[in-house]
Length: 287
Image (cartoon, rainbow, N blue to C red; front, top):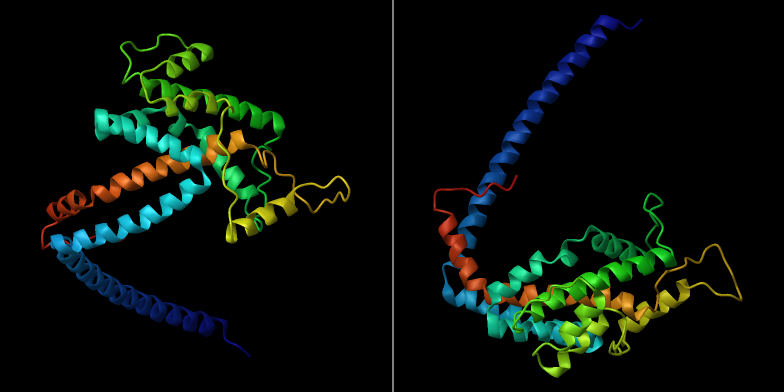
């Protein structure tokens, strides 16, 4: 016959040993983590203290970014035109001023734009599972999104154009904004940007090759077919909509490209700031 009290006593002893062992294991792991953190900090600071190494890293990142941007802009000339416009203004008014205007713009702080990005990326990922808790994006919702985002992007363009104009625009009318931007003293090739926010004058994107074609085939397979309807085929609202592509993907790719270039160019300054932030006796807390 089993002694219940004896069982409880044995279990209690096992638990005490487990707690003791767990405490020693955590202490040993923490010691190893601290040692690794100290070594990592030493290596990072040693790397950043060498201007030659920082310069080599900067050149490597610049080459990678240059290849990525050239390839991306080849497939999306609308994003390239946005990038060139902001870059032209930056050369005339300074990077600080342009960066402030971009980050202050409602379009890049709009929760609806972030929601649209999450929704569209989910739809365009072949093996994703739809999240039923999110509101459905039907054709009407997409049209509302395009109108709102297009107007906000137009507002940003007007703010940027005002850097070159004699007077800022006082009107909130869409027609007045379009006319103000198109008459601004900017290079003629940029004047089409205002109309592009409303889905007009968009440039044709180059058809992707290789893996890009494979992605397009997946998207085509997901489109509904009138001849062979199936519950297994997901409808993708906005598939093939060039205005939607411009407002979501072209604008975010342009912003990512602009910030990436600035980050790489500022790498030596960032390295110097990181060096100043830590002294040799501090250990980086990695959690």
